[in-house]
Image (cartoon, helix red, strand yellow):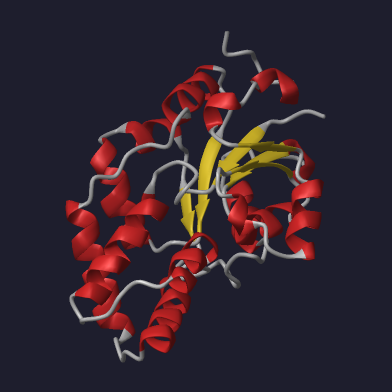
Length: 231
């Protein structure tokens, strides 16, 4: 096994936006005299788009928020949010960068949300990641996660693309993302502390297929994938 390229999911893998989205949605529904439900909270880590999340919110709480209204509200509240890198991200990304391993981001989010969030970290993302493919509004991505499309597009946009998806390692934090990553034929690392995501027989089978399961990226050992040791 030779890993030549690495792809990261963004929300919940590199940055703590999943927790942020939960908090923002709670604010949005509270402003409309509703209360957050466990169904909405549990849906967020595996949501495929803001449209899918909004559908759940409207149905659960008998609201009629429009998609445009929801996106504007989410974007404005993200501007003020205290968003941080996930544990272990800075050390791992800097290590891989110094080892000259090409990295990119494959997210289901939109370009506008990615730009707002990534800008909070100065030059960190432009410096270390060659590109970011935002499946929500990238014209070349035909299908959202759990389709593997976003990973194929992200892999081919490197100046020197991988010979095969078998040479790619993908880091994901959701069952939706993991399903697409495994379907792409790449090697996968599933990073989550949230075991409640694993709810069905299909979820258990997916976890069995992943190369490695971690609670945080702090636990990742590059030597397991024949990458240079961070020691």
